[in-house]
Image 1: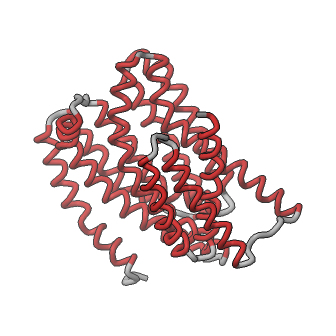
Image 2: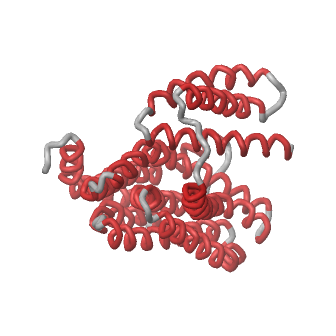
Image 3: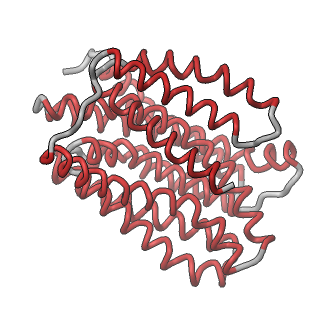
Length: 336
């Protein structure tokens, strides 16, 4: 099993490196074609009894075609000493930030079992697994906008970086808020019916935590895609430490509620730090978080009744409709 994981880790590192590079030179269509080719062995490998083989086959195919493409285009080379030092310094901070993000995702699972019991861990796993489905949207968006951030920042088009981060945050927060409202209304009941287990109110807290994560994602990506990766990684590390410190007493006292509340506090810490530093370094306006800050108090109405929550949804729709129109016009270039 350890050999499989080691192979997966190496291939995953190659795949991510190639993806970021190919996006950086604005040839994302090459990566898309290679991904499509990779799905052929990925699907075929499901006939094997080895659960790791499909993922190894997918990543191996991507890595192989990546090396072929880079070799053919003459893009493989040996970095100079000064370039290696820059790469090492950047990668070390980026790795720290990634490690903190992974800990925030995985921490609630194993700490719930260690500090609580298997039943608590099961409830936390069910709630977070459903809530984290929302994060696929910012992951896709992140792949698209990271090269734009780096490219425009390199050309010193700081206003473009600022505008892209602000508009993306506003639209992403608004869209996510509507999805969260819908899940607060019927999500717990639908998921419980489909999968045969009962979710409690911890599911609602998990949704709010993930919503906060999605909101700060464009700005922290902007920091990490420019020369402020150290600051972005520092914020993520502080958020992970806050979550860890709060998980220890909260899980023991509040069980599954403590696990999701600790996660929410960790993400909230990162949100505050990201809003402050992205404004200080990149002039990204904290006002871009208005859709989130207006939505969360209304979403908390779910703890009173679903009828009151529905009233909150109507109020949110009436208040935010103009902001949606403005954001869409901005992305289509109808605003200055």
